[in-house]
Amino acid sequence: MKQPSDDDQAPAGPVPTMFEAIVRLITVSATYNRGTVTIAPHILYTRHGEMYVDAVTIERDGKPPKEVKIGTFKLDGLKDVKLMGKSFAPSALFVPSDEKYAGNSLMAVELR
Image (cartoon, rainbow, N blue to C red; front, side, top):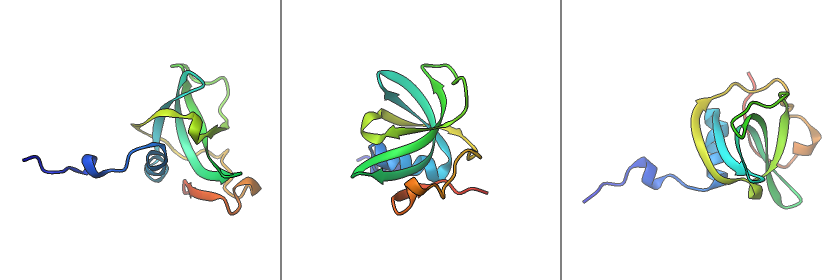
């Protein structure tokens, strides 16, 4: 009889995946607007009853973005969310004190 492993018991889906990515500072891949993105999620928060993640886009359809910036992704719009295993450093562009996060933040990277 097979013994359950940590992988068998780990929660699945975009929310727990984003929590893990933020805590462990690991990039995530997903399908967004029919394209593939690799992102470095910095904060998961709610707005108007919906969940959003603000993240730095590392790649879009296999290519780096023209400029580095923090983008907002509606969590419902991200499909096939997977941890990539590549670590990232929190971006200096991320401002955790931004008023849009006040009282709405679920999980955020820790700035050092």
